[in-house]
Amino acid sequence: MRFRFWPRTLVVQLVLITAAAVAVSNIGVAIYFYKNSEAQTRNFNTERMIDRTAAVAATVRQVPQSSRLVVMQNMSRVEWRFREAKGYVTRPMTAEEAALAKRLADALPEGHPRKSEVRVHLHQPLANIPEELRPFSPRALGSNTELIQTIVPIDSQTSISGVRIRPTPVWPVEITIAALVAGILACAGAAFMARRAVRPLSELTAATAAVAVGSGAPHVAEEGPDDVRNAAIAFNVMAAKVSKTLESQRHLLSAVGHDLRTPLTAMRINLEFIQDEELRDGLMRNLDELQALTEQVLAAAKGAGGEQRRSVDLSALVESLCTDLDEIGEPVSWANHSPAPISCRPNEIKRAVRNLVENAVAYGHKADVRITNAGDGYDVVVEDEGPGIPESDRQRVFEPFVRLESSRNEATGGTGLGLTLVKAIAEGHGGAVMLESRPGGGLRARMHLPRTAA
Image (cartoon, rainbow, N blue to C red; front, side, top):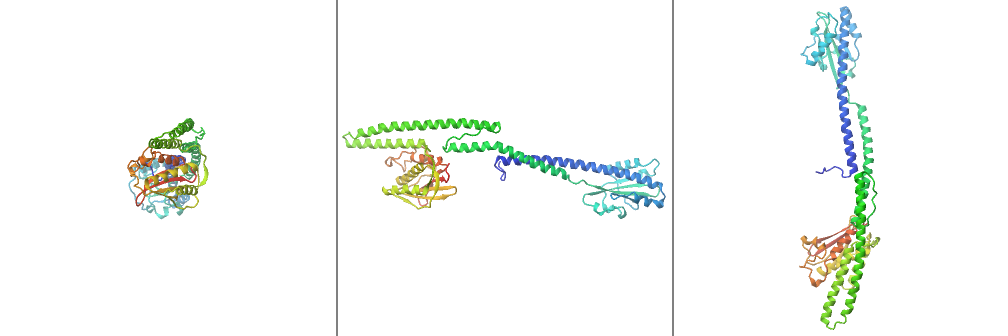
């Protein structure tokens, strides 16, 4: 399943995965330290409050009633305060509070009265705390503040109440900063390593595309991780074998073409000595067909041959072809177009366009030729007024020797290799050829050629 916004490049994916892994691990560490620090801070504050309350209660019990308030004021601090407990509302203690109350009672001196009445209340709402018992600093009372209240009897009539601020630990900023720094460093390292691994893959992709369009077999650097390096080694071996095979094929075809032309020429000369004119004309037609078939087979097999690319004006190239055909009486029309610079093998392009035009004239009675701009290149469009080709057969006609008998019979000539050659030349330039229905009837052939053909 493909995520809509998930990046497609391997480098970005590796960086995102690394960043996510670092972020998740650091967030987990931060949460752990936050929770652990929170528990430790609460336990520390609770222990201090119990010890402080026990000390204040023991001290206050030793002084006269009139001096007790002064002593409690002197022993109070910003974070805790002690006063005489008057009119406080008791509530049941939780198990945790009861355990703390017992520890506070045990911390009181021996003989301290009413130890069983010692109380501890955690998470005490501020509204339940008398005004005189609230901490001195209003700034200390925030949303992250909890209050601990202790109540300890001093004698048979008096009890003291202590209130302490127990702040909740804030999120560990230092760990967050460290996590951000670690994430940035990890992403930078992942990007460096990913680019090191992906660069050979990019070179391998470019080299594969070059081989696919017949641009030779460039050598790919055999570097990077083992998997990538092994792929580059295998590609170089394969490309060398393919290039060698294609070169051998070209040499073989050239030799075969030369050897075939010689006996064909000799046969053509010998036919002139045949007295029977009807027989001679029949044999000559067969010989012409064999000659044309030989040339077409050689051209189709060579495909994108050894011609060098150069920059030409596609508009001028197609216009000159149409003019030549028009001068010999072919029904060809050309729509003027502004200069269309392109890098290509001009003789091959001219041969491909000629095949399209001749097909349109032979099977569609006329050829209307024009060039259109098409994004990264140009489209050479050839339209006719013939019966067209059924959509189910439009891919099949590009196969060698395929001829649709309903519209292409023996009287038309043709070898069934014209469109095969057009397709080979178009794809050899990084383009494509398509057949479409023409509005109003007929067939439209569209050959797309990039401006900088591969």
